[in-house]
Image (cartoon, rainbow, N blue to C red; front, side):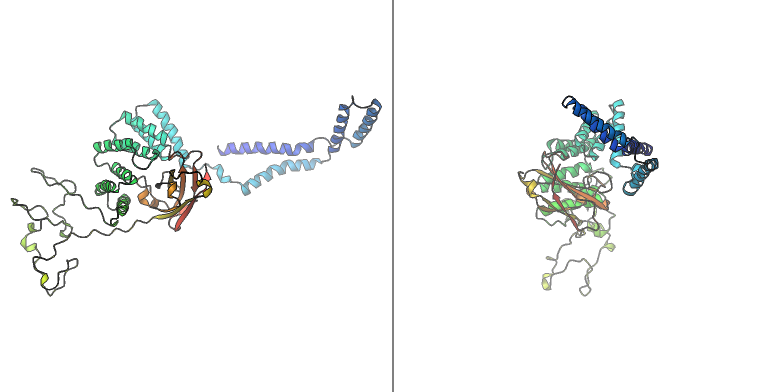
Length: 472
């Protein structure tokens, strides 16, 4: 609604209200109206009264009616003043307690997105074989959590371009959102397998395979997928930190040291005639402290592999250590006394992996009111979703559990993000929603149980308490 339309409608409403305010004052004298009503009631009883009695009463009422007169008791000046005062008072009251700034249309991201969806849908009606358009439509529906519409659009895109790894991955993730159980649905697994066949280093496909394994409790398999993914990521990116945090979490579930970084991938040896290094092969121009120590040469091998310490020139090799001089930093300690012989000297060790600081998390205490928990079996799915308080509707963090897990305390972090770049640390304020899905579907439906926080500053608030206390 435009500002002009609002003003016109408001003016008509004021005139309409003024009519009902002034109409009684513009009518006949109230006393005369009361006598007239009594006279009309008497006429209705003409058949039931004695003719003489009826005539006498009517004559008396007519005399009262004539004595009252017909002029309005309200002066014209007062009527004119009210006609002006009512609209002015309405306008001033609106300025005081209303929202005049609401006349200016706000840029609502969801409204704009829905408008774009309508335009894109009309475009696809004219060009139904546009696979890219169907994929874009599916992603738009996915961003506003219309997962049923999203999967229909993505299936249409995949029907047109059945080897598109990007669409395969997005459809697989959409089906995961729609799944009723933790883990990877069978169709999602098939789609991700096809995507990795088409693009062996598709990062999101590897990540989702790890997510599915983790949710199913197969933490070893999750680590395998994520360790395969992490060498492909930029070590300085937030995505790298998120995946590293997920690996640490999976290791913790297995009782392992969560601080260990995944070991580097072993590169295959160079084949005869191969003049380029395969991905992950250690280059010979690396600093010495970054090289891996090569093992002894196997029988029959006469040349040293790249990086072997004996390939260095003699003048560049380190000489013997003076027993009186202090050991350099990082040197393995020697045994005391005669035990420090050539046979039992500690072997050279690989540099210890750099310590990774623990990823910060935002604590959420989650519970459900006893009144709503009555009648629940405990197997109902609970979705915990964090979104930006002022931003796109895409979830920043998602957790899935069951009612039997409540009450509980969880920590939301960037590792819970579902979309690259859309994580908790990217937004100063968030809103957290917890919902018990009676259907197991991620989309909210009537009958679901829900609780929601207000806007929370993740930089200032130590955590949040969220109680599922309402029924949709």
